[in-house]
Amino acid sequence: MASLEKTTALLNKLIGENQQSLNSGIQGFNDLGPAVDELRRTLLTLRGAMSRLEENPSALLRGRERTKEFTPK
Image (cartoon, rainbow, N blue to C red):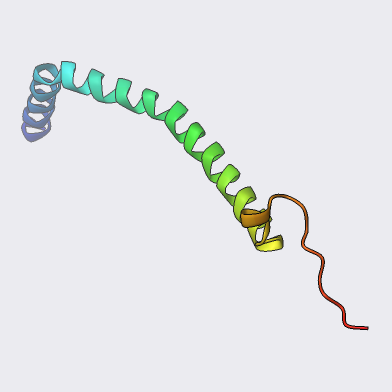
């Protein structure tokens, strides 16, 4: 039981000494939420752009109009 009390006292002391750092770290985690949301939106936009590029690669050079394929007569 004495060991548990010593450990509890040590933990309380460490937390007390580092309370400011712990609070800053928690605030930092809260700030990550909007950054992760923005990253998710950016990745969705890039995924859409890559899909359009795969569907019509010539659009990168010629604009959005599809290039007509040559069909010999």
